[in-house]
Image 1 (tube, rainbow, N blue to C red):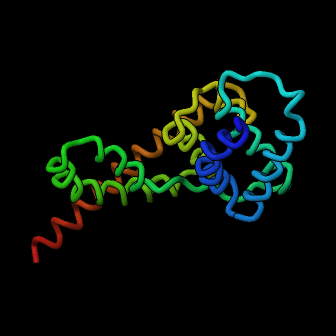
Image 2 (image 1 turned 90 degrees about the vertical axis):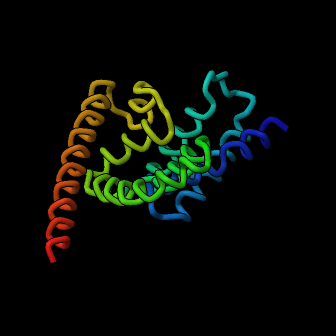
Length: 180
């Protein structure tokens, strides 16, 4: 009963995360299958954990790496879906007014994130889209805490540069269009 609950509660998030680690959907599904089969077969010997979600993410990443021998490109979750969650908490009128401005910002942010190196994309995803702590990210990515901090800092710095540059370019283009 608890096993089914854990599976049902986490399967969608595991699939989304897995597809960010590998673009090979069959590999991800097989790795999730392997993970839950391993949990079931070794359920008597598993030690207790305070954070099942973290354990599942780390185990899935390890299964994918083990099953593939090569990581596929990392992509980010759909930014529009995340912003929809944010807007659903705001009053409807406010969300409608903000939506027009945010669509352009989403597009610019998505392009900026896509320009980051794959490891930086992964660290941004784990930190800001899945709310993992720095220690958890270090463990999932199998790097030390300082490397996680450096990756996050470098990623944010590059995102700021990309977004500022895109903002200036949009301003120049709109000024040029308005002259005609």
